[in-house]
Length: 269
Image (cartoon, rainbow, N blue to C red; front, side, top):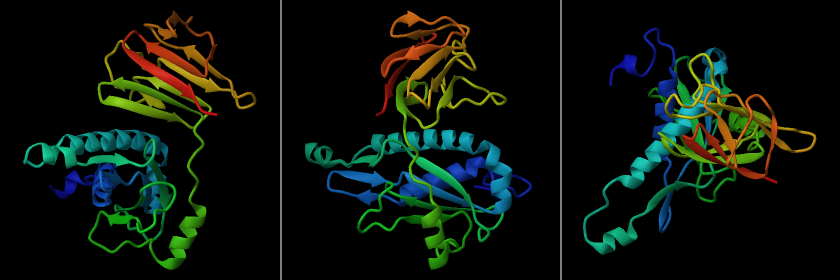
């Protein structure tokens, strides 16, 4: 692999490199159990202040692509041919999985990380595991710099808790089965584009509009509402919504986008 494939030609860190390092960290952090293998799913990504400032506006996009890449890598790991040896080998093969519903990725600036480098600390889940001290990796050939006692204590104190999940949306698009956790009061769903990012990106054909529908949660009441914004229509529990008209979204509902993708919505208490 050439140096330019890992960073931009001008030496700047690329999103592709960050995702590649997340995948490497996940694979190195395997925690083997009797019948399964747990993989890290909580990642703290440390960047130099300059890189953090430059990439701040696109962290959500890097997270979306990273989660997709992590899901695909886990699927590949589970699809690998198992050791030969008949039914006994198949019976004892282990499943690779994560100990949470989804990956959590946060980006932090740290002055000890060199420009163009990335340092990643990972855990199996939000609660520290006995006997598991996490995995720390860096892009460049150096010792992790954010692991001194003072810095470790500082980041442990400032690390944000797992966001509250208001609802989950399960569906399957061209990239496979997906679970979207709604942690904000409003999300836009659709095919999106370079100039029109979506919170819930649907990887499919052009029957799905760039912005297909919007889901909003009223913070005062906790009631969810949905608005069709599409060209080819959105159905709620089999009934087509009127475009541009906000309607109540039940706590458990089936959303169909353009008769192409069905999404199962479930609110959380």
